[in-house]
Amino acid sequence: MSRRFAALALVTLGAGCGHRAGGEGAPAASSSSGASASPPPPTTATADPAIEALARAAVGCAAYDGALDSSCPAMRAWSEAKEGFDGKAEGTLVAMLADGDEKMRYLGAYKLKQCGAAFVGDPALAARVVAAAEKEQSPLVAFELGSVVGHVRVSATGTFDRIAAMVKKHAVRNVRRGILDELLLNNQDSAPVYDLVRGAIADPDPAVASLALHSFWMGGSRHPEETCQVYADNEDNHDEELAAEAANALSWSGHCASRYDALLASLERRVKTGVSALTSPSFVSAARHVCEDAKATDAQRRRAAQIGRQVARKKELAGFLRSGALDTVLRCDGGAGGRAFIGRFKADPDKALADKARELLAGK
Image (tube, rainbow, N blue to C red):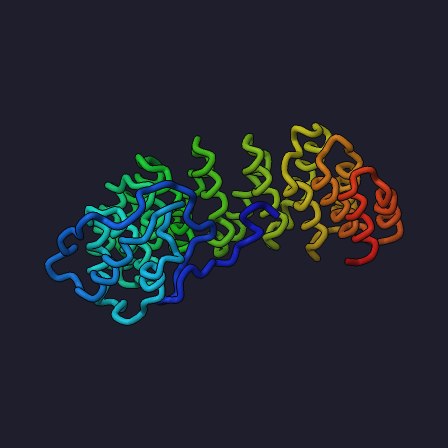
């Protein structure tokens, strides 16, 4: 499967309140580290002093890779804290998004994503979250705050136009990516959001386009027919990474059987083109997933098996691609013919490929 579909489960980053992490997590980004020379004034005149004190302690933790050091005791305490982080705390957390210290803004966004509930549907709180994201320039804060914006329910808060503007253009790329990581999942009833995210697949920034496509795996589940069309529209994308992910998702979703013939035709064209069109193992796994679907026809399984055979024979391809092709052959043709074909590779000069052939035949 593609690099992200292999880990679709939402990752729990902290125990406190049940952290709602996105499918991809914060991207790498450098930022400042170490404690501030002197604490800035309170976030607001009515800030919860206990929450503020806990956050100020975490400001002393080092920042790296788009996050504060999770092994730092103060950051761990912030992540695990539950007491006091109910609805009443959200005003304090939202106010932290306007703090002059980037680490305070990061901490506010982190805890809103972890514990926040009211802001997603409260027009006033949502507007403040959106305003903070519009102004954000810090690589440390960008993805985390963007993903908080992605939790906002646009229909309930009237924020669609402002959020859409950020998805299309923002000075910091990871604000856009953070929004896309969550927006469709949390607004599956919104046709404008669906269209916005689908349009973002054509973004000239590959990192933005990739996250937009990826978000349909979870976010498009309520509209399977439309989502299958999104995948079908991108199985021949000029970006090979997007094409591979679309092909793999289409075949693995379980809802797109009516498009298998077109998908297999696309894969057959890639095999005919050769090495330059077979850059990802996801193309081969897409054929395998067709065979794993009970709705696939015998004819489709035969075509998928043939794709596997042709890829496995291409000695100019990397061993891991050919190994995946052998797996496809076995899944699509587990009878004597398929096993005999795999058996020819048991003594292949590529040790990894030979090991894979023996492993498959042994049923491991």
